[in-house]
Image 1 (cartoon, rainbow, N blue to C red):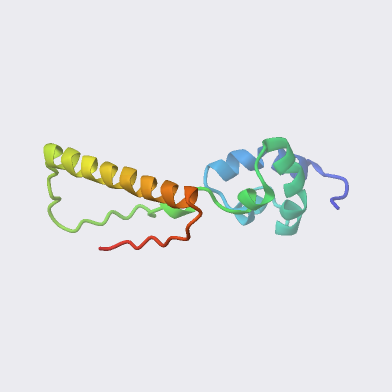
Image 2 (image 1 turned 180 degrees about the vertical axis):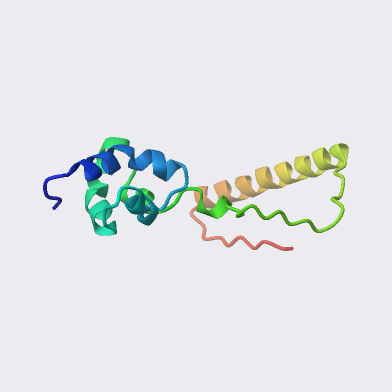
Length: 120
């Protein structure tokens, strides 16, 4: 249970979600406010309650999967997409999804067990 808060802790609690949304990890946020990671962790319940996020969400960095560290990778010339061909393929996939949904709905209605196998 968190004890009384000093000024640094109050500021951290107040600004945690903003830093978190900008991709900062809980440890980085702790460093910004010169507080311990355990201080941040102890206050996550309060921060979650105020923000509408869960403690689990606030422990994970929301943008960590998208960071490329400024590195741009090129693999050669980019293949051009034929818009008409793409639309046709998209329509085919849409039809296949409708068919699959119908099959699953029917199996559920009939109380049957079923297995879906995806082919490459």
